[in-house]
Length: 549
Image (cartoon, rainbow, N blue to C red; front, side, top):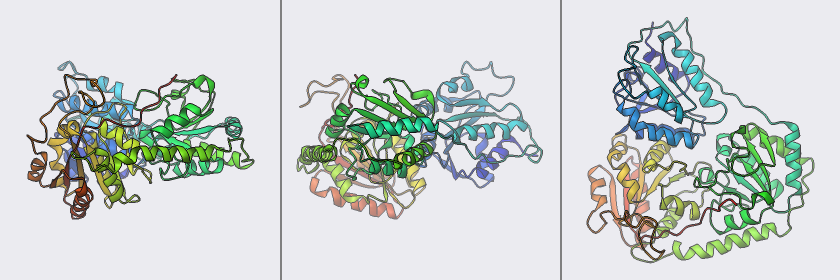
């Protein structure tokens, strides 16, 4: 006979869960410890699910991130974790959150009902009500985590439920299931792509969750079609490829406006969510390849759709196109792609090679591009300017070499992201880039990397405020009354990081950028985290999001 907590620990091990991120207390934690399951303890209840969320993303749902926080009648942990779960839900991340449930007989003892509350930010929110139903609930949870549209699951487990017989109520690990496309839809989509004069592939994060990056590359090359990705899909198509037009900037704007056919693959086409809209949508043909019907005819009319697993759908489409790959694309299309990218590069080279002091933030990003191994590194951004600038100018070569995020855009998530990256890819160089606002959120959790000897690097773009909020060369700013923080002349953040065990450097000369990054990465190889505070200017310049029309 075993308790539900011990049953859960054994089930997680059988499902291949490698660690559980947590902030105590939680009754499952002690069972996990006794079962020798690794616990990664964060410093608050928001970052525990953030690490699990990022871990699931980085592994494309092939490995599931799991977190535990405080629940029960005094469910302060769940209340703090709610924002993290909202982000996982909005961004479609298949993670599992576990917390103590409200005991039977005490459900009226608190005005906050966790299971009801979390129904709004999960695929499934439930309370295990009997000990013997533990395998049933976990089986259902992992089925939802591994099948269909990605999204988080929440389970509450009341303490003192009793015990159950694991032989009578066994657990069998869940496989997960995929569905293929309708062949007639594939044939129609193939003919549309052949007939298009100026097609554009619009690739979303569904490419990554579908493990379909090879198929995306094959399709683009077969049909000689340029590719734009969403920020969340950045790296799904190599941005050094001749057909890549990146995430945003001049080439993206040009080809979104001038295309006659949009092939949206694993993308929701949700403008205003840190993503592009489709301009003049009624004058274009829009084809969507998507896992379910939820995003079809959402903000723009969908002319044709292929519903099914993205990898299976793309493979079927490629096979159909190979029967006749002759297309009617504009003969100048590839040359236009090259010319547009050259114009864009020339525009941003001034910033990327700047010798200004304070340092232009793009010069830091150029240093990262020059220093990081493009095939063995990971980079993520913060909400705000670092997201906008890096998604404009940083080139990503490999899938999940970059973690883009932001439908809800909770500041500080980059720290959870870089911790999850190091746990996922121990041999990769792992870097998070943050502005002043994001650093304020993550400050209390920096100690975690020291405690676990996780060789990560935090790049702090320190510019004394929230760039673009207040006045500057860009105009009056959009929030002129709430933009100033204590600046780098009065506060040395690198000293705080040094006291937390980081190799900590403060850099104000652009000529020292690469050397500082190399020193940080060398420390990382020895298990020491690094904190690089770059004294930068406020420079809210980046490629825009194309609006829908």
